[in-house]
Structures are given as C-alpha cells and as structure tokens.
Image (cartoon, rainbow, N blue to C red; front, side, top):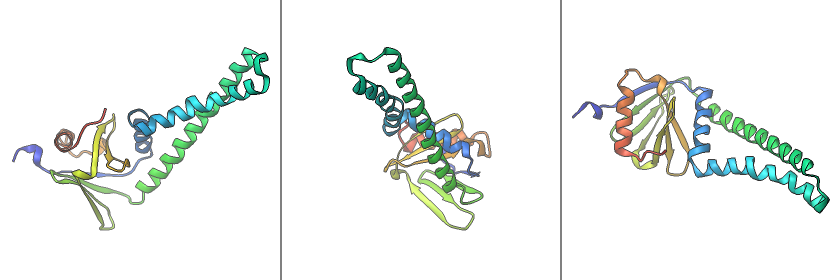
Amino acid sequence: MDMTDRAVELYYRAARRDAWEVLRWRAVKVPAGRKELLLWLVLLPLVAPALVVAQHGRAVDPASLAVAGGVGLALGAVCLWLERWRTARRMYRWASEHREYRLVVTGLGIQNHRPDGTAVAYRWDKYKGWAETRGLFVLVFINGDLGWVPKRDAQEPDDLDRIRSLFDRNLTRWG
C-alpha cells in the first residue's frame, strides 16, 4: 500500500466564500451555469432595445438603442448578482447547519461526518467528476448537484496531493 492509498481526513467549517467560489466555477465550466450567464447578460439586455424598436419602428434613434441596451445590461447584471447571492446564501445556510464537519476521503469514496453523530458516505460512482479551484475541490454529483472540499483545512501539506491522487484515480477531472 503506497502513501496515496491512505485515507485523508479534513476538519472544516463552512464559509460564505466557498459557496461563491463554487458558483463562479459553475458559471464557467457547467453548461447550466453558462446558460444562466447567457440568459442574464445577453438575452435580458436585448429585451429593452427590442421594445424600443417595437415602439418606434424604423424611426428609432441609435442613441436610444444604446441607452436601452445599457439599461438592459445593467438590469441583467444586477439580476445575475441577486440570483447568485440568493443561491450562495442558501448553499451556505445548508452547509453551516453544523459547526464543523469531518471529511474522510478513501479509495472507496467520501464520508462526511457531522458533529451530531450522523454521517453520509458516497461511493465514487455517485459522482460525475471533480475540478479544482484556487481554494476548493469541487465535486459534481451524477444528478448535477455540487459539493466542495476546502483546501485550507488540510492538516498536512501532502494531504492535498493525496486527495488529488484519489480523485484522479476514481473520477474524471473537469476543466
């Protein structure tokens, strides 16, 4: 048994920035996230100029189209931010139900132990893949849900390399 087969144990607390980082990753790497960006930052901003054209026809002033497009883009950006804020808040609220979690990554899968004595174990076949951001390992479940493991809570310097090795051996890397 080599060193990469040992179980890796992490103790972590939920942080708001983790949910934001997962959502940023989702927006770029997952088709559903890209569709959301397309909706808020491209399609919604086109509604305002389309309404101006529908109202004024061929006599529309290019400056009013530009203003309408700018207003639509600003509205889309605000709506996107509010949607992300709401989702991140919900994810954080769910993750912070317990003070601290103990996560064990083994060759069989991942076990998440909670302070109340309950535990959830997921075998590798429950995951579609994994990715790495600056501060997290992002896990993509088969049903499209996302999970994350914060890197900041590694107890030993080589824990992160062992986690990468276990993930690479058992899951497909995304991005």
